[in-house]
Length: 225
Ligand code: HEC
Image (cartoon, rainbow, N blue to C red):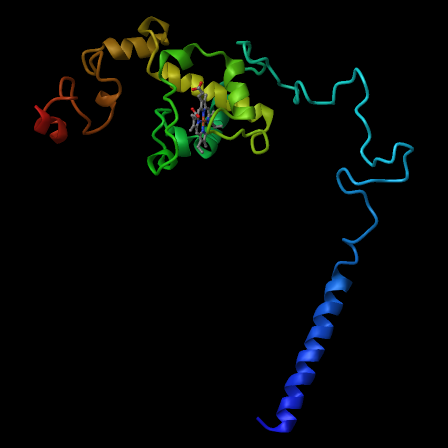
């Protein structure tokens, strides 16, 4: 290295150090304002603390029920009108926010749980069928065990839409035939579909009554038998 190139390197290094440090202070100008950090001392108040003591006999706004659709955990009331629109909204939100872990049908077999996260319980068990609406609302809002709360992502009305949809999922496997609409009852008892085959008879090329669950229908089952 010649003397002149050595000089050039030194000048460049010095210049970049100067600019780097200069920029740091220039940029931080807004951040370095006089302010109180948490628990820092202050001579503004007589007690020398920047933190103000909590007022006696007061409750912080929002600390008990932090939204307008809050329902206590043990309550089974439902604060919105349940209609098709709410259920469709619930289905859409459920697919976005819950199905990755709970699965599309609520069995607890979502893709995330299949890849290592603790497997959530199925919604189709007696305990969760009996659980109150408020319990579900609390789970979504505040989380449950390994599951995070979703209050930041899902506004209250959408939490209820999701609960309505979860209830529909539960009902889809546990409804009494006598509670179904008349035309569905008729469909179920018509010889075309058969009581146990559900909608299969409606699907072109779908299984005929008696075929579902048969050896022909499921090669996996055939091996086991
Ligand atoms: C990231 C994965 C994940 C997502 C997303 C998720 N959950 Fe969960 N959920 C879990 C896990 C794991 C558990 C079991 C937690 C435990 O037992 O520690 C659980 C448990 C539950 C329970 C059962 C509580 C009980 O008593 O057993 C309910 C109800 C529930 N979740 C509802 C929902 C709803 C509704 C959504 C969508 C808004 C949702 N979860 C989204 C992972 C998830």
